[in-house]
Length: 127
Image 1: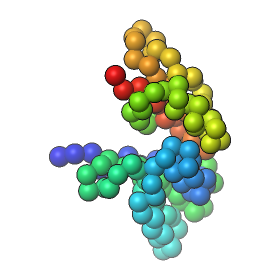
Image 2 (image 1 turned 90 degrees about the vertical axis):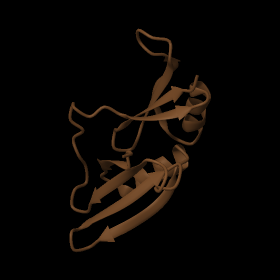
Image 3 (image 1 turned 180 degrees about the vertical axis):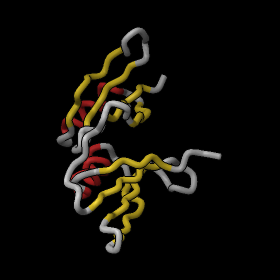
Image 4 (image 1 turned 60 degrees about the vertical axis):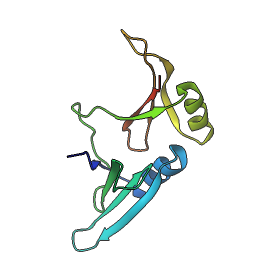
């Protein structure tokens, strides 16, 4: 078994695709409209779905936004240099909500950015 994808619901699919592709450097792997169900599924990631876990962005056409709730945590990405990643993300128009630094009660270097819907994406510096 392996993880295939994580699904999040998004209010503005085009803004979300732009964030994950242009700001975080993922690729749009596929996008399918389901007119009968009034929704679109878009899959983004850093590699082919056959070998890599990806994100499924679900856009329900009649729902402009969602409440995130308090049970959801975050998406995590490995980066070689968290501070450099934050600088690049800001330069591309992304929102850094926690600058790179050691995690609380630990030494791992982390940072957090936020997507257009408010989902947090953690950047974990590779050791």
